[in-house]
Image 1: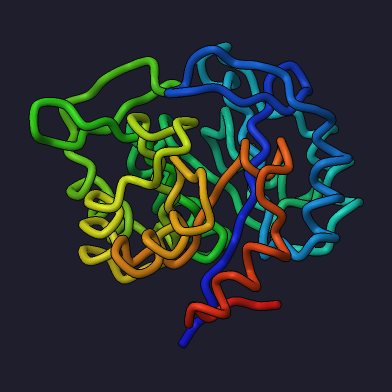
Image 2 (image 1 turned 90 degrees about the vertical axis):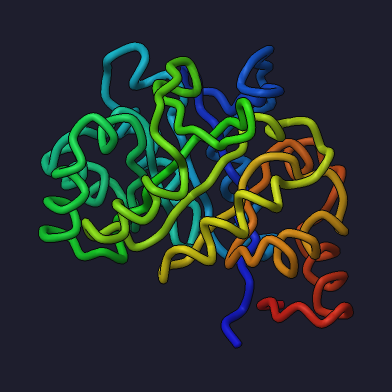
Length: 251
């Protein structure tokens, strides 16, 4: 059985790590280089860096900051935010990213997924989906959760994988920052509809929530931010907890 992955997330705004609730009320939680280095030392399986306002502010990701973080970590590093071309990805891979995450630009131009997979391999291409539950259905949102679409989340995930996405990073906006648990239903629905790994994001608050998302949500990895940033849960403790309960993790 493949080990389940624990992935801290650095949401970046103006060069600082930030965190919000339901994509709003953003507060500063620290230096991204220090946090990234700390999480790598603590046994995180991967690190995700999302420049959360790059698309909305119509600019590129902070490549210099990506370089600084990459120098301090020895685990797979995924970078997202404002990526819209093959050239953008070349720059970030040169800066030390291992994988890149595309969201809004991929919805607006699905060909981008194919082009990136063709140039860099599917294993490099993570499709990030920000999703919200409205009137009985999960829909895709763009521009850091600011713009609704009529695209259904499961259908978009399936299309993206057909185009070459090698992984799905699925964030429930309803659950984000609430610490009430992951959105198990949509996570399971996406996991069962695609043949690539699914990273669940949004809502982690207790160690039990990770068990739920791995067992019931069928996620391959779980991403969290505030519980790690505020030291409410330590990564080594979380992994021991999961292993003791029969979840395969790398210790």
